[in-house]
Image (cartoon, rainbow, N blue to C red):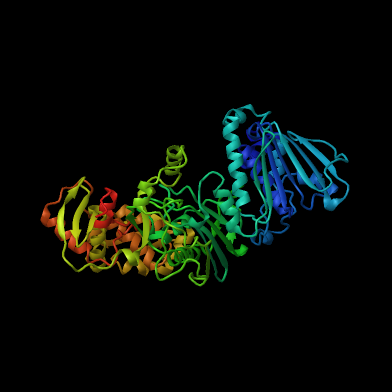
Length: 604
């Protein structure tokens, strides 16, 4: 008797559906993609019970023909592609022909549609049981209702979160989809109440800011729009200035051809682009849109389409890095002695040589909503003498200082690098070490606090650039790479060679590390990890390599320095062109005598 048997059609359909429909959020993703592909300019999502009880998506798109309704819920039936070649020229959000069939396998699915304003028809599929079409439905567009998700699959339903949590995931997916389509009016209704209303907007900047400001108290002046058109692709970025940042990368969102994707190299390019603009360990709020030639993009990797393969990933990575790096001014934190009345806690100050409102400032162009010119500022003495008119001023102040992304910003402002730092040749007086981390010195009428670890790391960084002491590994270290990295290394391995790092290709996607600089000893695995992921310009690779090597050898936070060592380190710091470590973190804080006096209320 044979041990191999053909699975029941219902069982096989539900197994396949498990790859596409994981939870209510997955249904929302697929139905909104279909609504966008229908050329709708109004899309409404309504959910009940976190989307477990009901999900309803309505649109005013072109609709579905009566004869196509039974096909729409059939596996691998789609209007998006017809040949294998179409798979490599995709212009639509959906294309696999799996979504509606999978939804109908695990819920009660009802599709009502009027094709181009004709007589409407409705079809229902209840957990794989298809009913006949009936002549009823909307006057225009399509309504898709999904009820009782996983009601016939209790094991899958038991793994769902609480309705409130599932509802939040649905909301997040709704916003992620709405982010990319500024010309469409989106509405989100939860348990009968309108929660989000996003009217159509003229620009992608406006749509992104509408969404970012839903829950965060952001000022639109704190974000900029960057754009660059290249041969095969276009880059559009909405990103924050230096005053707005987080401690993780979770707010760097990436889109490829309007699809939200998880692509580490694109996130890495954004981070590299900021470089020393942000303090170490912090990351911007960024929404990145890449519009690439469909022939160079492959989304046919996973049913959820969150993964993507880009044949020109290295080039895109480089252009993103260069666009951000060349378009945003580097700003360095400086202590504020006086607050400003009715101003944001942190208002970035642009370089004296460049106006943010100058449209020719960037690579291609940068759009920046202008600051309010000539706004009056209140001095410290005036603030002390004025009695607050609002009796609830204390509570409002607490809320202001608790704004997200501003944990440490109420005591600092940003000034341009040119204004803040020039190589200092004059003498200084070393005053001592604070908290086993900061070296304190006085120079003319200013006080400087220097992070000893970051400062020494930068000094080593520059010294390592000049050394060529290379040693071969007795046993080469083998490592595998992705196809795009393999192609990059095949053309650019010389970048590593000139810095004393020898790499050689053994086989397709298999490389080995053969030699390293003497100073990189015991960092071989870190170097390999870096090589496996790095695809950028020579400048980016150099910075990444030496940041790895210099960090381990640098003086650590907590090390006690004698006066002679501290003075020697500070002398080298004041000879630098700019005070930033290889990771891009600015490691110097400057306080003037005037500012210190104002802080303690001494005006004379």
